[in-house]
Length: 584
Image 1: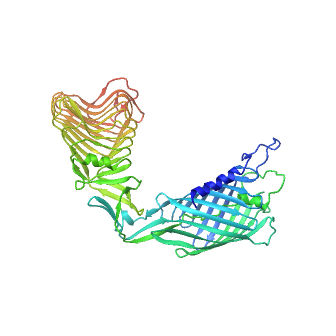
Image 2: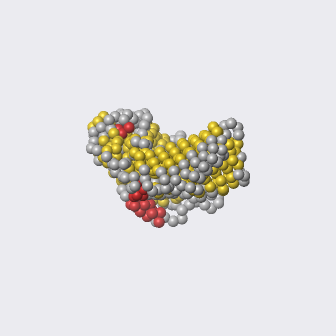
Image 3: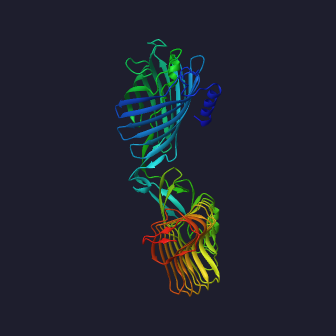
């Protein structure tokens, strides 16, 4: 069923109804009508030839009038095969004047299968409940990751591989692997009231027949007939008013699971006292709170792979475009253009060493990724881990900055080597991050300057928000008069600096060695970093240069190997170190 059809049913029912009343009415005597339908919880047990199932179903009306009821249904289920599932639904039912109750509903389902993998699904259904006949139909659609590689199989085990072939990332499925696949599908049934009780008697006995089909192009379909019988007692002596007891028997068969039979017992417990009504509810009115009938599981099937055709992988597991740049498909001079052409919302993997002649500018929400492992997905839906060779960008003279970041961009697991031997009275940077929500993590950043009064720094950030700098190693050096070296410089920004190692060394006359400079209207968390600043030419050795900044209470756990704090004043809070010192 299409989602628009379900919405049309819901809106039609709602628009045909007027004068909705609250779920909980005013007390008797205040002039407000009592609601017809109240909340309840059903407990059900099923004993079958293949498994045993327990289920709880919470039914909560949230709006109603004399003929229309809107409700929430929340279910939890488990079986003796370690499978568990939750269903979270909204529905509406409407009583037609001539004896039919029409309904529509939608559920979000989440299942932990017996193979210990999770699946998600959307269920949409419609129903027509009559005095003598019932009609029901449901459609099921997996969402998210609906193909899960089982432990010890597939891309991360067995003989399947994900590797770089030329300039493409290729998935090759080997034999002996297995995966579990959530299937899309539908079911439907027709019911008939067996006329052994009067139509308005407090008992009902109905027979149902129907079928189901679930499929996916990777596996054969799971399809077959289904039949069930159901006896309902709407009034039960010695139980609470409004309690119901249902006895059921069910049979179904398909080629995958064989024949399955169940006997079931369900008890309904009302969650509020029965209100006094001017009349007893009719059978059709009682059926407005009847349990939604749908497949109790996200239907999944295990597929054992015997080897599959090679597939070219073009996306990461989270859906970003995947582009791999190597020296065989991209020249040094073309690297900035190739990164730009990958576009926003992409992951660019740098494999090998590049020596570009111009700065590289990232796109919005783009990731520049070097050596390591990255989760990817094949066109057929198989997921796995692609392990790349190291990615290095090595640059020399003529750069103000090597990489210019963009909003929501990431630079991760890269190696940067930047050596400038020329400039005079200027500064050069490896990464510039004057942006919002950027992440710089797990990189090796090496910078050196040998020009007169030429400063080199790993990161420069100004007017940035939510900048995250974590788990990086900075090795910065200056070797000429006034040639300072620093790990990073941040101003007028909000930043988190954690778990980094800052090694800064200079030997030029008066050249300073700096770990991190945080100045001017900065809100910062500086934690668990290691600072090692040395200057053999008489320049200052500074671990942290702080001025006019605000530091959070989490700015702790930092280590000083060598160097001192520089306090420019105007700070709020402080940065603390493991030697019990603070700055300022």
